[in-house]
Image (cartoon, rainbow, N blue to C red; front, side, top):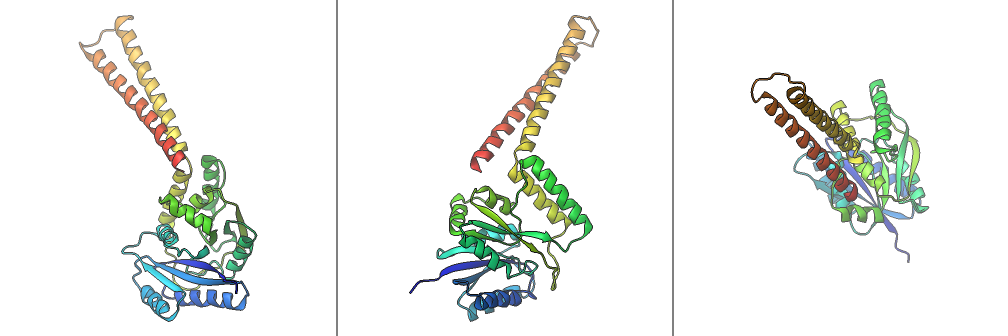
Length: 301
């Protein structure tokens, strides 16, 4: 008798009491109604919810052998919870899918992700064709993609919605033992075969979003800094420019004093030159240190 492979479904949760059971039932029905050929298990990750979310998870764990739950002592954020969920993925999972509990990413999408994974793709992600979001968010998202392309050298494809990763990817993340705040970008940068499945994102029906403009902005900064050393390179050239300007001003004051005979109070020129040279060396060495930090980051990635 052939043993079925196990697929894990990771779900980060924060104050989603209205959605947890519906999430569990919808995914369970999908696997029952469709002959996927896989067993499935759930791993709910509670970010110290303030409502009844964890009580509902605990009941599901007690009533179902294929449900597990972790609760964090604080709300460490959705990306950190997903990362620790990956680290705690059971060894017998052949792959794991990540879905948000709000059900805006349709549960039936998991069938398309599994189908593409069967074809040998190690990282399969949902590529959102349409989003239910305001005009401001759309403008900011397009602007971010343009900035990301300029800084990273390419537009990253993997989004932070729904994805499925192979066991090899899971093991690679565990072996790295290092958390990147922009988790979706880090997973894509691992270099495995990747493909997106286009779908339409649904509107949230129950509860409110936990992401506001400030959190999106912080996440965008994480994505840009994690994926590029361009800010460090920019600071290096700024340091060179400031150092050159300081040395040039030092030479200027020396020429004024000793060649053109300009009168200054005693000791003024010496003080100015020493201060400017101090600035020059400080900024030069800071720029060099930044370059080495960038190289360390690149080699670590």
